[in-house]
Image (cartoon, rainbow, N blue to C red; front, side, top):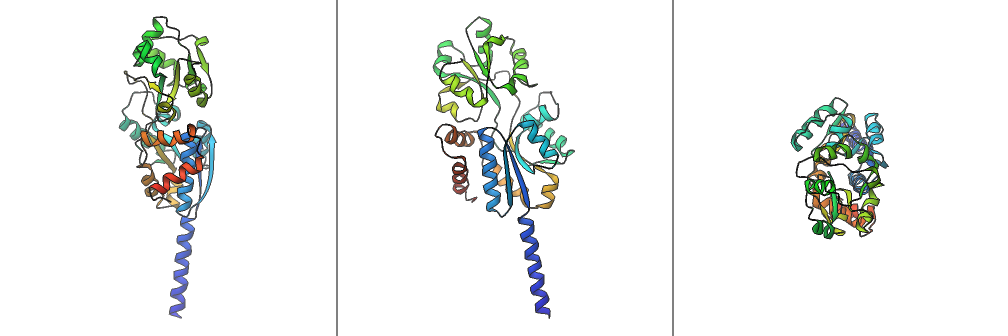
Length: 293
């Protein structure tokens, strides 16, 4: 009888452990390459650990955040600057460390937990073709502003979000004291900015600092010499309720986060956007290379 009870207890414990590891987790992601890689990588990683995962990538930033606050998304990779400015309406200038601490505190009140930030800082940047920038003598945003004020013929490519957002195009011009007419700004999808800049359709393009097309297309990222752009440290954010149900999830996601930096993300992004590799294959090979799959 005792042996039977022991066996049943063991089966019950095993069942409980299986249930805990196999809990449903919905992973979200935004609608550009880096986020699609990360959501796919996270899905494969967690499935390899035994979780039952649903992937819902390709969402708009505000919609994705709202879905997480509403409990429809359990986990996704967010940028510290986006939460600070867009979701928490903080406009004061903060260091990267201060930015992380502030969003961690503010979002905790909303039931969201910021885990360990990666070393990837996908902040906004303005870039030019290297040869064009060299010929014009432009290396910094101050130099760009001077060129605009001197009447140089420059056309800009921006995505619609940056054009309208609170830390975007208008305040950037104010910070660097220059003004570009509407006719000299082409608004387009982020992915179209890179070929437009490469092909000479525009002289200046809005890029993301970890995008693999920057070195591949020989772009020069203009130095933000007045530190206008805030930190956008890439970080896994999880619902507090999800962590409560999955005790090892934080440690598991932190292990993945520590592997990511600017160069790593640029390489992964380039494999998809430049070399045209499949996102699933890129994600899988990265995980396998680090013994995470």
